Image (cartoon, rainbow, N blue to C red; front, side):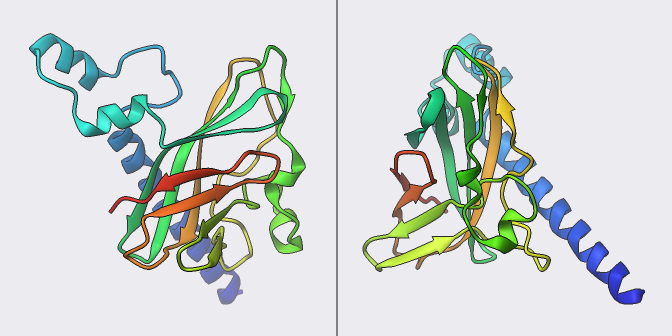
Length: 192
């Protein structure tokens, strides 16, 4: 029984670390899925006459846009190398279509260990063409992908914040291709 409690505590700590990382990422990106409203920092910049910071500019211009089926659009807003040896890719999954659309099951990938934990972005990979390596979404000790999970459908115009964590490529590799089944590929620049 103590092993079960330890494993449960480990999952809780991993979830807490991911949530903290997302919260920090959301603060750094200057906003969430409500792109029509200016963020408080953007309003302050306009009112004071100062130029927007680099972070505010990144929130307005995605690093990459990957087009999917049925009007789905994955906008990547950040790709940050963390000291722990991984890269966190964050963005928004949006339904640009006029009707509700189901997230394709293929986005979870085809690995049994990942698929058994529900629909996710577990099929995503980073491709380092310079180093000739492909990096898969990280998993916790129970095989759960370290990415947004529980995806089902998006209503027309709906946007959902998403993230994916990968092992970090070598420090001198900054440009990688992000691939997600049923979506176009896009090149992103890793910062940090």
